[in-house]
Every structure is written in C-alpha cells, then in structure tokens.
Amino acid sequence: MKVVALGVHILDVLARPVAEIPDGQGSQLVEQIKITAAGAAGGTAVTLAKLGAQVHSVGAIGADNAGRMLTMMLEDYGISCEHLVRKPELQTSATVLPIRPNGDRPAFHVIGATAGFTVDDVPLDLIAGATHLHFGAPEFLGGEVAAKILAHARANGVTTSADILAEGNPGLLEWIAPALPHLDYLLPNDEQVLGFTGADTLLDGCRALLERGVGCVAATAGADGAVVVEAGTHITVPAYPVDVVDTTGCGDAFSAGFVRGVGLGMTAAEAAEFGCAAAAQVATGLGSDHGDFDLESLRKFVATEAAGAR
Image 1 (cartoon, rainbow, N blue to C red):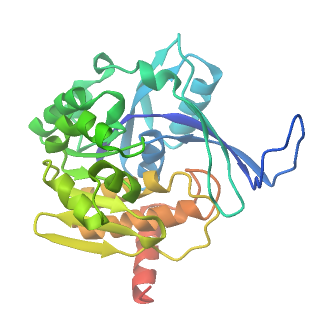
Image 2 (image 1 turned 180 degrees about the horizontal axis):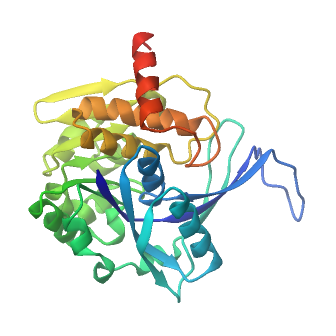
C-alpha cells in the first residue's frame, strides 16, 4: 500500500505531568519531556509506517533545525520526505504541549511553514501513482484547491480520505465544502461534526456531512469510540479500554489505522475498529509516536480484545 500523507507536519515538544504553569520564572520537575513528529499528516504518516504502509510525506517545513529534526524522525520510520518542501522565510510548524496529569493537553502552537504550503508544492504525479491519498487538514489550502487535488487522485484510481485540524464551525465547513464530494472517507472528531453542522446528535451530524457528498464519515468520539456512517447504514465501534496517559496523536493514529484497514480490504466498520486499536496504543504513553506496535501485533490486539468481548 502506497500512501501519500499530504498536509500539516508539526514538531511536537511534550512534557508530563504538568498540573499548572509556574508563576514568573518559577520551574517544576516533570517525569518526561519528548519531541515527536506530529500533525494531521505527519502523525498519521508515522503510524501508517508502523503498520507497514509505504508512506510519502508531502507538506512544508522551515529551513531550520526543527525542520531537520522533524525530517530525521520521519525518515527513521522509513517515510519518504522528498516532497517536504522548505520555506526559508518561515519556521517549521511546532507545538508545545504541557500534558496534565489526567491526560488533557493544552497547546501552544506556531503555524509556521504550514501557512506557506501552496498547490504548486503538490506532486501530482506522486499522488497519481499512489494507492491512497490522506489529506491532513485540507482547510489550510481551502476547499477549491483541495477539491482539485482530490479529484486528480480519484481520476487516477486513488482512494481518498481527510481529517480536519481546526475546530468545527459552520464557516469552516463552507470553506472546505467543495472538497467533500471528492472524499471517499472523512475522519473528523465528534466536536468538529457537531460544530460544522449544528446537529443535536453525532449521528445526525455525520448524515448531514454525507449529504455534502462524502462517501463515508467515520467520526471519533474519545472514550466512546467511533461512529461510522454510510448511505443507509451506521454502526458504533467501541473504544478499547486502556490506561490513558496522553491523547496527543490519537486522532491521527485512528486515521492511520482506518486508512491501513481500508487498504487491507476491510469494511469501513472493521477499519474503524482497527483505527480505535491504533489510537489505544498511542494513548498509553507520551506523544503521537508512542507504542512499539506493527501490523501483526495490532491484528493480534484486536483479535484478543474481540475474544474477550470488550
């Protein structure tokens, strides 16, 4: 399976546990500080690579040490970074995350080079030769541009998916709306779905997105798992019970597990279960790259949990 992970690539700096930010120039000791490759495309790329996909990262980074570090960490997983373009005038997108003892994750973020990524940076030939195009945060290019890229992919027989980085609101939905009819799968979270549509329930919100032309909506809902909605049918997939340390990257891990499942011929419901399993691995440690798992071990995890009827 050859996947192009197109969109937002971020360098995350995480510390845990952080109960509060010290006043003035105060300091406090923490148990862990970690730097990871992350973002709606970058974090998804890492988990996809763990699951045995051939992954190509496409996006923008700065010509700085953060960009070099981000590239090195992606390449350590075997991800091709040939199409991560350098934007010398901008810093690499980065986030500082003080993780609270309960796993919550407030964030300080610099958009940086992500804002400089344009349609001219998109390698259309690479996409045409892929199995799957996963668009991480199409809102940064806008719906019209994203629609052209996604339409190009589908015209070449490439399966398409996307998730959203920004918070959901009706204005953002209209901004990305032209891209929706070109998506086989949309992978938002529950807050985004409800914010986009104003629906009273997640199921109604997902159905409203289907009416915009999306083939299938698989929406994550934290500890409640995921809801998969296709024309005329829906199913709820429960989350796996794990001891949560940090939820950073869980949505990206779900996307990766889902995309890999689709590539393996799973139904949307089975792919969502695989996505929930990947997210469960990531949630048990710090950062979006947490978890020493691969395709075979994740399959065993799913089979074991199914036998125990979680």
